[in-house]
Amino acid sequence: IITENSGTFLFLFAENVNRKAFRENVKPGWHYFGRKMDVSDFEWVMWFTTFRNHILFALSGHVIFAKICSMLSPKNRSLIYMLYGSLAVLITMGWTYITLILSHCIILYSVALVKRKWLCFVAGLTSLATFKMEPFNTWQEGFATGSFDLQDVLFYGGCGFSIMRCMSFALENCEKKDGNYSFLDLIKYNFYLPFFFFGPVMTFDRFHEQVSPANNPNLTRKEREMWNITIHALVHLGAILVVDVFFHFLYILTIPNDLKLLKQLSDWPLAGLAYSNLVYDWVKSAVLFGVINTVSRLDHLDPPQPPKCITMLYVFAETHFDRGINDWLCKYVYDYIGENHDAIFKELLATICTFAVTTLWLGPCELVYIWSFFNCFGLNFELWVAKLFSLPPFSTIERNLMSEAMSRRIRGLFNAVNFWQIVLYNVLALNSLDFAQLVTKRLLLKGFPLSTLSVLFVTYCGVQLIKERERKQAMLDDPEPVPPTEASKQKAE
Image 1: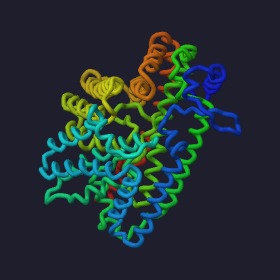
Image 2: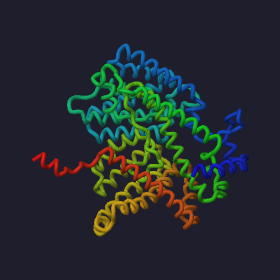
Image 3: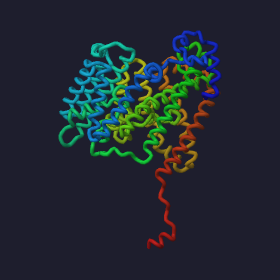
Image 4: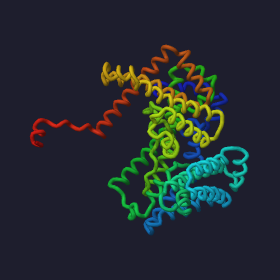
């Protein structure tokens, strides 16, 4: 889709370069090629253009310092990581900011000693709300000294992730049978620099186990582990270059900001634009977390994996862009309340609570409310449909009258529709509600039946390819036992 419509995007830029959206979001880029760059995504520009050298300096310093000190004292490496992280935060944000973080850590540690999960949730979510709602967030922001462009991002990133880590610590302490974890364990967990400002969130039980001296005391690596780390780093570097090319030629983030321009597009380029925005956000998440994960893997940690490719998502249960937060929510909220996710009312309660916490994490606003509602509905609707078709007469028809291939084809039709629900429900959060409404009206109303059915047909073919790949992979991972032959039976007898 992107290949077919790249010419359309280039034409749109050439014809509309002086429009307001392009003047604000397209800035000088490759000087030697005379190309301008799409700078709509502040986060990407911050990481790989504006503050690239600062971030590389901090992470490189961590790698060098941690490697030297870990060689000298491998048993105390978690303490060394904490000292370097604390020093970096202190130099960057000031002593008043680190005092603010420590005060929240002390409060949540005190609550953790009570060993009541509901109390840990109340205290943790209240602390998180103070950074997401007025007037508390403005008051606390005053504790960050200095004034530089990255200050707001570092302030709210460090505070938000710190609260999530403290909640994980408190909830894991409730599970501890004998005694309590120490306050030093919490500080070592929270001030690990690669995770501090930008995540991802690794739950306390996993972090504590991996940095424990009893686990790999000599810090030996598995066979070809360094080779795999190098390959992943090169893949991320390649992805950065590809995204840079996209930003200089396709302008997929700027075009959705101009509704008048969007109305000139035909149905296929509009659908491709919505899809490519989600692909970009997945690539961004994979690259940003991949860079941090590469550093943590050099520290002998096993961090949360990158999110699943958006092209391979056809169910809401697997839809996420931050696997660290997703793992946190599943472990402490979704799986804890929903248990085996078979009961409709338990699943409804679990999803409502999960998206309530997610809404608070993202920052309560109208757009986040709409995004949470639709994704919560989509997750529950999947269960309702699955329950409905597991009952007679649907289950009887599928079991007795359909072949396995036909069953997969029918499920693929539902998955194709589901895929575009995922795209439309998430593109409103990535771009705007107006853009999502325009794409929905064009594909479902104005484009019906030709555009609607043709887009669904292409999606259906893609879903079938993905499902077939997953089926073959499942057979390789868990092959069915081979039935014994007559000769083997006689030998056994």
